[in-house]
Image (cartoon, rainbow, N blue to C red; front, side):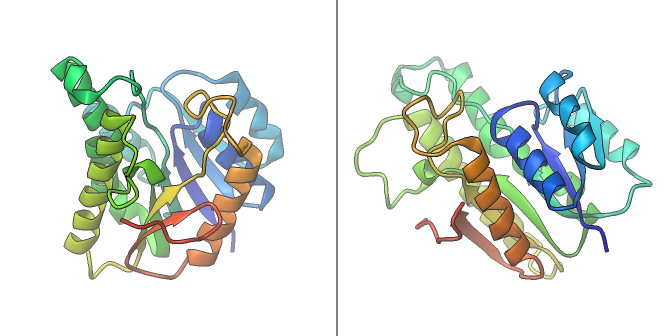
Length: 228
């Protein structure tokens, strides 16, 4: 049976890399973008790819419209919310404008879980809801500081996701918070240790092995558990 993935935030970077990896493994993929992405459109020759544009996870109306457009489609084995921001991440949170910090928390923590709440009934039995987190969101590993607003937003995402999983503890799907590694993207920078293909390949392999398992876990691209 063909497996189906919904990748939310796939115009570039890790989202684009995940689409390529799922298609290479024979999955049917639905990918969302805010604006048209030539790079994503170029993957249409690699396998069954449906692109949904105009989807901003901070826009409840846009998410509801997407849910309506996909109402007749088969359920998804994986719903993976990749979208996130690192606006002025190098500036201490206490020095940033309050509205900017609030916007980072909305996009990185609140909106992914709101999206999961809207789409959880579209996850196939044994499937997964996956939210892109970061090792920087681990409270126990934070010994050096830095990137404080980004770290805090990902820690908040982890907490909200665990609460979401607890509220749906009888569901027949699981929740995965995923650390992709330090990846050479616009966010990770040129000094990062992994390329997009390596990270995405690892994440897809980890998620395929995780299908059918419930609960809420925090894993990296190699399948190792990340401390909360």
